[in-house]
Image (cartoon, rainbow, N blue to C red; front, side, top):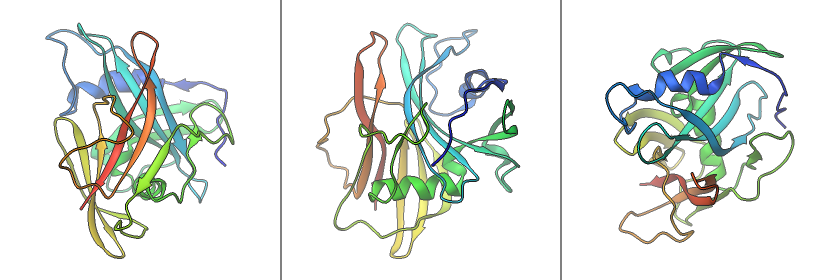
Length: 221
């Protein structure tokens, strides 16, 4: 299991995100001259079976505008640059235990994408965001009987106003793994026209301190 170290990161993750968020197509800019004020609002981790890549799904609230918005930022932490992923680099940081870390938008990282699809299929155990070796039972994955078997590998990534869509290849064909960038509370059973092959549902904290629950990611044909 991944170990969560009680140490420092310089610069910190939220500091890096404050500079990175405004350039994203899904960021709700609060107004000219207003900088993001990101704060941790929830999330979870997944383990890399090889023990090399840190994987975190961070819910980040931004109170810079009149109304708080919560974003989902999947992050990977690597001890060396990920080849061909310069455009996905959020920044570098010095970890108090592990040394230099390259921090990426995880939708471009093949390790995170494969583990996220494994979670959808019930083949990965979500871990608490801030505790070592502690499963998080509030995070649930679901897949339809018609869902493709894994593993999944990245074919392409495209960004939109609400989500980042990752086109992946599985042994049975292609599908889209859509990461919800702007988090919204929904019932566990979300009715709609979208033909879902699977989803991941998790929680985060709202501005008033109450807990919300909704889709972090969905899988479509």
